[in-house]
Image (cartoon, rainbow, N blue to C red; front, side, top):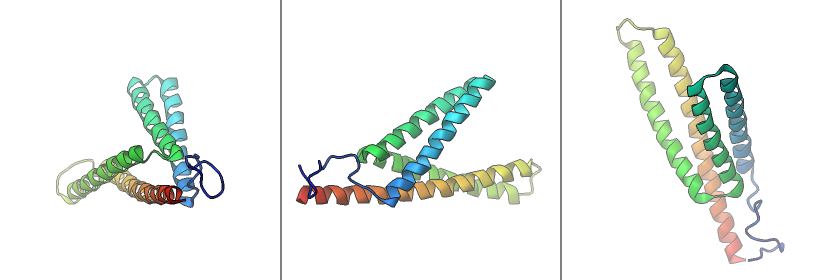
Length: 149
């Protein structure tokens, strides 16, 4: 089907938005960091880290491809997974706060450091889930427009 400018409606760049660009940059940075982490794991010989970073690179690469190629189903699945991760992060943050305010003798400094990391991660994942939802809406509107022309 042809759109109004004569280009193919299935063109990869049919949705051009700041949301898509921001998502591509955000996931691209994550993908690059995962690759760097993978190289460090190989250099240092950490077998578990190599396995984890291979999985991370595959997930980040799939998400990057899904954003670029506008695979709505894959993006919906990733958004659902990210929302579940955010819920788990919030629950673990609450548990961490309860441990910190409790009277038990523990390594509270390490728990506080981990808690900060989890809170920052949940905020970033919340932003990512929001942007994926916004991008999915833009893809839907774009497809409805291309079908009507």
